Image (cartoon, rainbow, N blue to C red; front, side, top):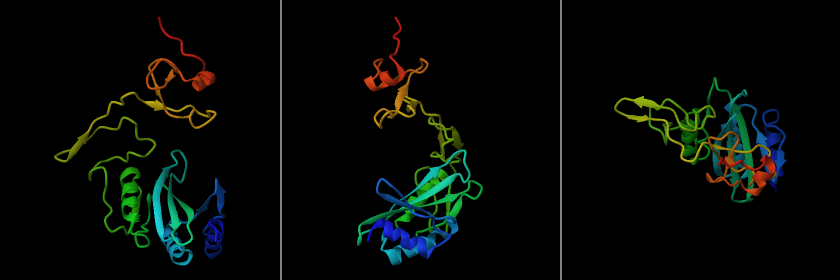
Length: 218
């Protein structure tokens, strides 16, 4: 049994709720169109298709789009050794969906991290509290509108934060480089459009080819 065949079974079982499987670089992804039914879909995938391990649960901020958030479930079955990815969308207005801790206990910390970093709540979670930031912290650091240097905050008698100096930063990427290496984050120096490697004046040859040499000041 392949991951695609298992995905097709899930699609047939939940016709109209689960999208057609999409394959990219050997990995299969399905979209669950109603986030409220994620526990039902996940429970069936575990019990009937053998996806007994939740590898990861992550979130994507589709900043500027609606729905704003995509929640991604990475499933694996030890018996058949197949991987399957499920995704579902959640609006910023709602920012909530049911927990899957009743399906996989390992979802506990994953859901807490998403709640802490992205602000998406998981209804029915047995202990939904922040896992990295302190209770009362007013922001969600992995949202795309959260600045790299952080935001100042002050919770009396609890904690405070100040904008952090970005040593060597901020870091930027070059859009559309010829390969992944060319798109690695680079330090942007004060000079306009000067993308440098490790704060040196010399550009790498692939960056020179794409953007031209840096003019050194006398």
